Image (cartoon, rainbow, N blue to C red; front, top):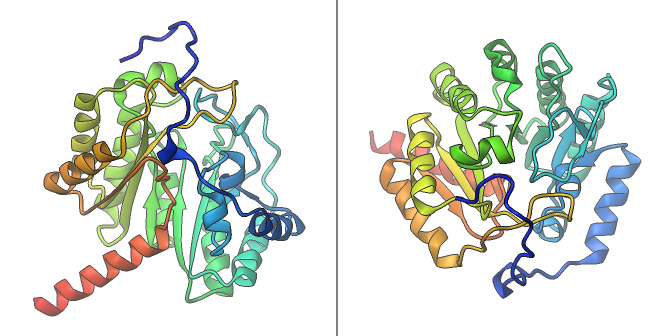
Length: 303
């Protein structure tokens, strides 16, 4: 593990397996549509490497509750600072965009809003309701912050029955003080466990990055913890430094290691582990949900 305060070292040249071509035309078309609606996506704010592929489908992960985060995670490029008040018409605008895009699966996430009494849970719930009204055939996935451990906020979101409830642990436990100083991995694991206990039928999902200074033993320990928390789906991807303002990459893990981790996760009892250098928590999320639903239907028929 790389100790906090280690002097800056220029990361190695980006490996070939992490280079992607972009389709400027698809990117511009969807960005223009989102700007007309006054909406942001985490795909843009976090500089996701899969943005061209997802925007060309089209699909997107909508970023609600503004574009400024109240925490200062050292890996993240989302703007930090004092956020604006929630916008009452935001749920309707997201729902209209989902309908206009013809999405079959909508992913809703947010910045962390420690300034709000419920952490933004009511807005999450309102967005789910609005999407269900305008696009009744669309499945809804939420990727929430930790709500500062407030279980009542979790219940507020669960009351709207999202198809997938996601919350990312982001990194291994030992790196939290350096990488996620405002977060607590025990709190995150408790949130995931509480979701599965309260709503067993809901798909519970989490994800984390590698390349921040962890070792294989720490990754294996984290996978065991996510299994214990009741996760149905786990995603693992390579950390890519968005800009020089974020912590540098400590290691580029080779593609074959992700297959090893995916197999380990499944052997531990995690039903679905999507792992790869360019995997992100919402990558092909709709396809994963459909596969889970198909498996569950087949299991019921066999019984």
